[in-house]
Length: 243
Image 1: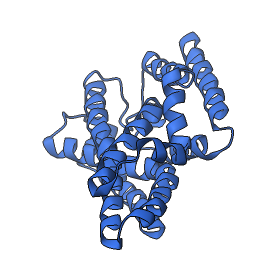
Image 2 (image 1 turned 180 degrees about the vertical axis):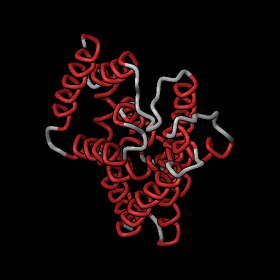
Image 3 (image 1 turned 30 degrees about the vertical axis):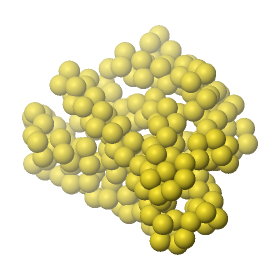
C-alpha cells in the first residue's frame, strides 16, 4: 500500500510539471497572458485549471495523510478479510481525496474571480499588495485560532482519531475518510491561499508549502511550529501593508 501511495504522489507531481508546461505554451491561457494578450477563460482553460488544482492537492496533501492511512490499514487487518479490507482502505483514500477535490473546485472559482478583477499576474501570483497582505495576515492569524489547533490535533493523532471515529465495515472506511479529509481541510485551507503569493504555477513554492504541512503534522513540536509560522506570516503581511 505504501508503495502504491508513494507512486501516486510521484505521478501527481509529474503531471503537475506537464500541466504547468502545457499552460505556459504559446496559444494557451498563461502563455498568451505573458505575451501581453490576456483572454477570458475558456471552458477548456477552466477544466484544465481545476484538474491542476486537484492533482496539486494530491501531491501536496497525500504525503501528510500517509501515517493515518497506514495505521488504518493495520487496524483493518484485525477485523476484516483481505478483499473487504482492501476495499475499505480504498474508500478511505478516495473519500479523503474527494474532500480536497471539492476544495479544488472552490480554489478554481476563486482564482477565476481574482483573475477577472486583474489581481493576479500571468504566473497566477498576487500583484496587489492588499490581496497579498490579506492572504498572509489571514493565514498567520488562523494558525493561532482554536479551530486550527483542534483540526491539527486530529491530524497529528492518528490513533486517537481512529479510536474516536471508528466505523466498522467497508462503508465505514468512506465516512472515516471524509471526516479525516474535513479535519485536514480545516487544518490547512488557509495555507493553500499562500499559493497566490508565490504563484499557483510555481511548483517549488507548492512543494515548500506541502513540506511545511507535512512537518507541522509529524514533528513533535508541530503545534508551536505552526504558531511561529503564523507569526512570521502575519509580520510578512504587515510589511506589505506598511510598504
